[in-house]
Image 1 (cartoon, helix red, strand yellow):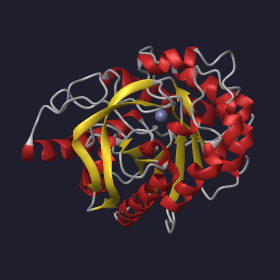
Image 2 (spheres, protein in one colour):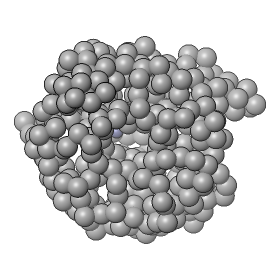
Image 3 (tube, helix red, strand yellow):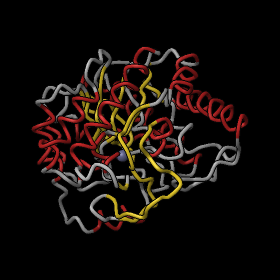
Image 4 (cartoon, protein in one colour):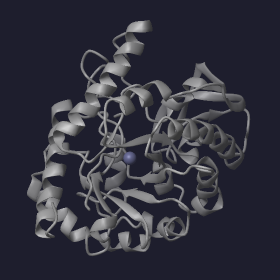
Length: 341
Ligand code: ZN
């Protein structure tokens, strides 16, 4: 019970990419970059194990960004002529690749790092992919002209990748859908159906991560505009509870999400965010334990996975791993109180 894990991304080592920024440029190239990505993946696994996490991930060390990383082996996309678009309902501008033809997966995207991760840990291995709605929302589109149609095209490509990751021994495949906290009414309409298509045929556990974004200024400003109570989950969790997804990953620590909304996910496993990724202040194990105790009123311990609110890619690397250690220690405090080990 109370098995700990991370949302997804971790900071990369200094020798691999520019620190403390999103879309950080690589410091290596060619074969050195390919090797460096695998070395960083193995290092991230080792550091998560040392921090005491129960479920580990690749830390997204081999991708420049959690969305655009998936596009490495996907046809129909123009990377040369990026377009500046407003993403997450125009919350911030980003230079995004442009879809100019049918979306087709042309080969493995993440198999190299999935193999490396699997070969170096006996722990439960979780792997993240962007969800269809978030992919659609992070790309310019000169081809489909219909977001739902494009989402289903991505769902097929994601499904091929997910089935391959499962075959390589990944235990949990998590789809990241921060866009679900922005376009709530579209989630039952095509967001969730597209995700169901992306997970079709998978026998491993599947998860969806829905958050308020990385701890970057644009997101922090947006959160400040959301009022005293963040009730976005209230619109989407009832539909998600009825879906075939096994696990739902939510943001809770230092957020204004009314904690009782987690109760809408009755029957699902819940990754509860007990670590704030928008501050460099490292939570104490007791802070983590307090968040777990509060959320445990709505999620029983056997279905409760203490986690981080979101990915940690843009953070200071020592702060990030310090937070993971506190997460594990905080969960251990509560496990002990419950008479477990
Ligand atoms: Zn997130």
